[in-house]
Amino acid sequence: MKWHPDKNPNDKNEAETRFKQISEAYEAFQVLSDPQKRQVYDQDGEEGLKDMPPPGSGGFSYGGGSNGFNPRNAEDIFAEFFGSSPFGFGSSGPGKSKRFSSDGGGTFGGFGGGENIFRSYSEGVTPKKPQAVESKLPCSLEELYSGSTRKMKISRSVVDANGRQVPEQEILTIDVKPGWKKGTKITFPDKGNEQLGHLPADLVFVIDEKPHNTYKRDGNDLIVNKKVTLAEALGGTTVHLTTLDGRDLSIPVTNIVNPGYELVVAREGMPIAKEPGNRGDLKIIFEIRFPTRLTPEQRAGLKRALAV
Image (cartoon, rainbow, N blue to C red):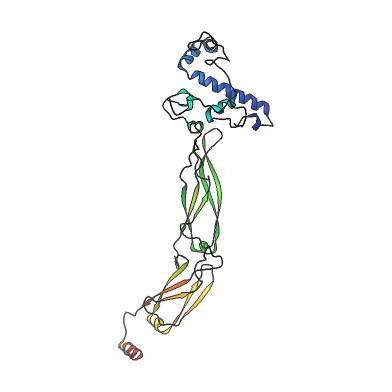
């Protein structure tokens, strides 16, 4: 396909020469794969093949008989492999060689033992697509709150024009949207490893959340654990927080704080990906630090203050 004249309009002469050489090389390969013909060729060369009669007949013509060296149009060779010409014209028809079929021990070039690498094409079977390759993409809560752009350098194996696997590197861009959750998948079709006879695998990045020192995520809500003294729990306090987008919050606590008390601050949670402009809630869960010792005067004062 690389040297087809139509694919080389600026250098047709060289392409036609190479194309003819490919045809001749393939036919020579087929002749020499036959043990009987190979023996004749080793002893007498091409002249011996010219004089070799076909089985059950009395004559043989080099370049025209079915047993000698007969270069063909490379498009016919492709038709033999794939069932039709890949160039859309000039093929020898939809018939396929038994040498490349799944029955009768068909193996490439007459060498036994291995599965024919062209068999799936000659039988008209669509090449298989391997399972997608998944990789975690760790993101901070700040990135998932405000969104971010990530550049990922990947290394993969691809098949070149000669059917060889070669390494390839590429930089992929991932736009992390505000509100994305752990488990969100970003798929890059055909960016995984490629093997001969198979379609390239898809590459999938899966969002993962890094732990945060202050906040814990619960769906679209954010949770903060806050410790307060007994005096603050009873007498009131103010909670100071820095939001994930860098704002300073001062939240007054006027109610009496019981153990496990939860204060909800509306719309200060995570952005909701499917509802632009909307956010979850911020939940502050309190833990009360009780004093470990009190003086007699403190005990007496508390009893008087708390007497009902």
